[in-house]
Length: 264
Ligand code: 6GU
Image (cartoon, rainbow, N blue to C red):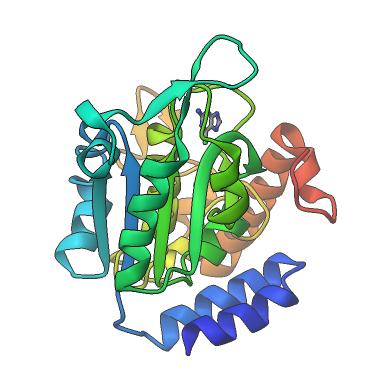
């Protein structure tokens, strides 16, 4: 149900307004169905810690998010856990073979239907809040972490439905990028954040950077908290925060103020 409306909304999802509508919808029609993410990796150790603390830990404990790590070497049909080989045509660097990936993907797909098979790769689509919002509406996702020179292109052509990069720099593998994506998705699931609406006011959710924040003491080494925040006037405070958001966005990310929302 959520997924259906999510798809409906994503078709008209040109603006942050519809993004917010999607998220509000998810929050108010609290659907206790949890999300399942299967991560295929040759380095599962690298992904054990990121999901066992703070928000991700809470998501798992509350039964909202299941994360399953799969070591590709455990199911490879090749001897001695082989998963990669030299590339055809020559050149430095190994390539992940298609068979171990296909075997594991089919094993998973036999048990349930997956909404997306995501490949983490520096030549994928740049990950942003909009993609995180859309992915948070899915039920079952597979994430493939690439290593070495990448994976055999036939897997990309025949299994992968989405290719994601987290930025214009090269990491040694897809694991840390996958952790970033799962964190960004996980915190959007209803019930993960304690104050359920707070994800809606994050930087980027309204296309603006977040305003500055302060806590006690009001006077720290003679540096004062802006007076308006101590005024107790919610209207004035909202207006100040909005102004500060706009100012920050103009200074740091003027591209976010343009219509395309791409922030370039
Ligand atoms: Cl998803 N993978 C790798 N290896 N490097 C990256 C990336 C992903 N995103 C940015 N750099």
